[in-house]
Length: 126
Image (cartoon, rainbow, N blue to C red; front, side, top):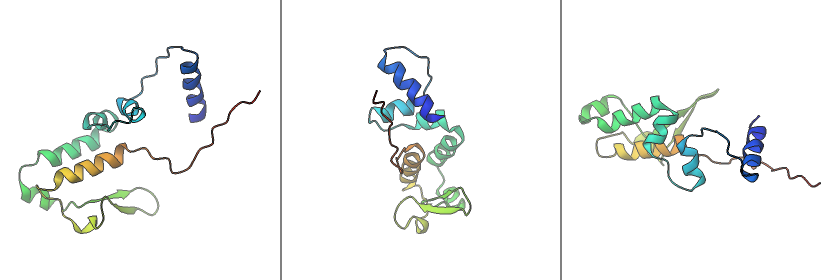
C-alpha cells in the first residue's frame, strides 16, 4: 500500500502534476533536512505534545519528582521494552533543571524517521 502511494506521489512530481496531498509539516521538514518543532509533534500526536508541554510548564520541582519520571520510554510490544533516551537514563530523575533535555530527547525520538531496513527501489527497465 505504501509503495503504491509513494509511486503515485513520485509520478505526480515527475510529471509536474499538482496533487492535493495534505502531508504533515514534519514530513516536509524531514525532506528538507530541518529539525521538526513541537508544533509538528502537536499536529501528529496531540496527546504526547500536551504531556511534554506540561512537563515544560511545571513550576514546582516536587511535582516533577512526585511523578517519578526518568530518561526512559516504554516501547510497546510483547514483551514491553524500556528504552533509555540517554546512557544511564533509568537512573536520572527528571528535575526542573534537566526537564528540557527530556522533552528534547522525547521529541526527537517521536518525530525521528530512521531506515532500519534498506528498501530496494524497483526501477523499470523497459
